[in-house]
Image (cartoon, rainbow, N blue to C red):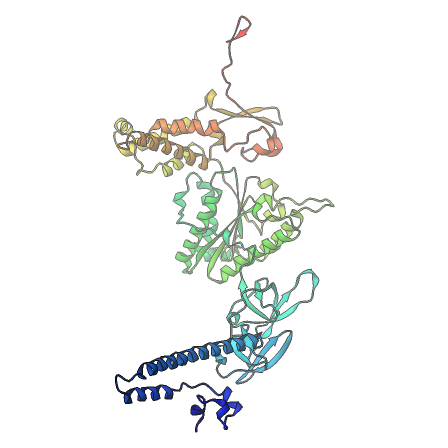
Length: 573
């Protein structure tokens, strides 16, 4: 009799029962059900035993289903128990494969040569990635790179792609290997990399926390014709840029060295930044056209105060990174332009005192970086300042900043050119202005002339500033003496706003620009006085007026007299 037959017999009557059979794998036994079915077939239909046999058959079937469910639950419990009692897998760092089937691992501060499970594709494991290791220290699974880890700065590039990283606070330096993703990366000294937690592998290059990529400013097409009223400054720059390329033999015969940079100095709002952008655009276009160089401008617009830092040495480090970034972009096929606005804020005259001043260290660092620049075809330096007299002479000496270009306030002719740039022919002009002038171009010229008359009038109402000189002489400055390109742009913008409001109020039918809009805008611009200092502090006004600072004693703004209340019979009306 087999085990399946003995399972349904009483154990007290079974002399051959073996205790080990209790642990045998359960197998469903359909024999009792078959016997019941056979008995039902043999019995007559009306036999009183048939209901009992049907009941027995139902009970046997229910017991069989219960046994199957219990067995399934037991299998699940055994699997869960095995899972929760199994030892945890360690995580190691994959450093390489010395030979087939063997992995070089770093686990818990120790390096191992471990076997690799045949089910793991060794070719898919990357240097620096994490791997799962069982209790026998065999590789049984693969994970990705660690998503976190310390950040270190590269101090030196070693042979075989290794990296030396410098640690802070004077601790010992470390040597790392590159991860698979950094094998072909063009790393440089000073780059920041993320390191795995064990400090064995450099995983990825990070954008520096103080990255100056946001200095980058896209330059729209900016031909010289877009700049009005600065012909003298533009011609000086064009001579420096274009003549050496047009006549190379002549310049070589005279052993002429190409300048490295420019200083644009003058009052605010007169186009220094605009000229800097136009220089970048036109120089690149000129090199493409005349010398066939495939270049693209890389304009780094740096506001001087932005790189000032309270921590000792941080500003100097930012200066180094700016020049390093420019040189790297030059290698990538760009022509970098470093445009430093408000240059006097970081390159001011050094002071001979015992206490530390930031200019004492920033200026020498800037001079050192500039000395590594060959010419305009390497990196172009453009400084802009309202007070060039405050910039250290070591910066402005020949060989560093070779051209000092004065950006003057526009006179009446220059203001006409600027107004014609902003009052384009496409602007809608009021019907009365068109009828008075006869045609659109004449009406536009009439608006320009009317705006110029309102700006440069020499009347009592247009007096703006009184300047007292050291000689005792007093000079009066009128509105037109403090004009700038930015102020003209603001005046045209205000006139457009007035025309738009009138169009909205009238349903927007035939509204257009009027001369009255421009005249009101001129008065509003000077009345609000937003771009001028609110006090009579000489230091503040020296940035705006075109006077030698040594000759100015006092600056007094001229305020219009408000009507006073009249006195009658001892009482105020």
